[in-house]
Amino acid sequence: MALRITDLSSAVLLGCVIILTTVLYPVDSYLYNNRYFGDQVFRIIPSSDAEVQAVKQLFQNLTVDLWQPNSASMIQENSTVDVHVGRNKTQWLRRHLHQAHIQSEVLISNLQTEIERQIGYRSSRKRRSEIQYDYEVYHPLEEIQSWMFEMNRTHPHLVDLFSIGQSYEGRPLYVLQVKADGKIDYIYKNTNTHTYGLTRLHSLSLSCQLGKRTRRFKKAVWIDCGVHAREWIGPAFCQWFVKEALNSYQHDSSIRRLMNQLDFYIMPVFNVDGYHYSWKTDRFWRKTRSKIPKYHCRGVDANRNWKVKWCDEGASLHPCDETYCGPFPESEPEVKAVAKFLRKHRKRVKAYISIHAYAQMLLYPYSYKYATIPNFNCVESAAQNAVSALYSAYGVRYRYGPASTTLYVSSGSSIDWAYKNGIPYAFAFELRDTGYFGFLLPEELINPTCTETMRAVKTIASGLLKKCTK
Figure (cartoon, one colour):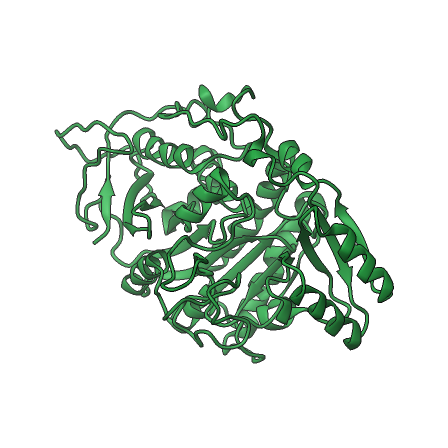
């Protein structure tokens, strides 16, 4: 059962959010104990099938962290391969690529320096979030969860907060419901008062609502971020979306119309364990943190664990691979909890949106096969309109299309599952950039990235209010 958290304190301006906890990351003199000093990120472009095979063979002899694509099996002719290589292996890889006449360049010459440039020394850095929440910096899990409580406390008429379950390591899986019914002045009067913090919750049944009860079958949009732990721009966008919706409700008629006619379920951090680990220990951790019996490797790819063509092409059965599909579908409690929630509300949820990085793409089903979905014309039109809206902000170009042909074939993905379970519009965004920064998108690019993505998401949501006749 989902647990709903409510509070009836008066609303304050969104810009003046007091963070309940201040967490300093990390406490050592160097970020991540300086573990990435001298590591490099290479971009390799194999121009023939022979070169593709040669690159795959190199990676069999060398332990590397593939950024794009996620698995060596997905390397294709004339497609870029971005790979993180440890400092002790960079010369070896450079020499072998040169000998094989395979085109390559170094995107990041010292990964440690780039990490420190992205987030700085958090123990000494002056962060505005200590007194006012800053949406233009990356936040660790504890700060994001505190922010979620504060959004619920300061905007009780527009925001509900509830948990849909627990992660493998026992962390709550929080979701924000952003909604309105057009009569925000009316607030449900509850005589109970509650103290809020991450260790003390008051739970109400899922059917309880703040404010006037909304229409029973009001359409809804689901947005999740942070499925893959190292993609920090995802959680930053989910927070940005909530901020923009709440700040704009009173004066932006388009936002007000969307919120009056649609409910938005926002999950800022899907993979809470992995995201926490990416702040504490391994900046480039991707998977969940579940333990696999008889293997020292941990975690499952949360975007290969859904019950749709599970563990077929584009997913791995080996627990040490980044695309490991898990021991069985929905083995991960995070995936199972979201799937259960969406199944329960599938009559209302008309759009599923998952925020990832990086590639600058807008993808829709199918991921697991080369085939056209039944409502292709409507979905294609929605994608085209969304990409056009995104482009209108700063002129950033996104590719769009079926995931299988636009990116690569992958099975057990969330967008395929959502579509197969009756959600007609299922999208996965791959946000900025195209590899120059990769997973280390600088904080100064959070604002433009989220601003343009907001336009795209608003366009998709607006399309739900119209009947597609194509």
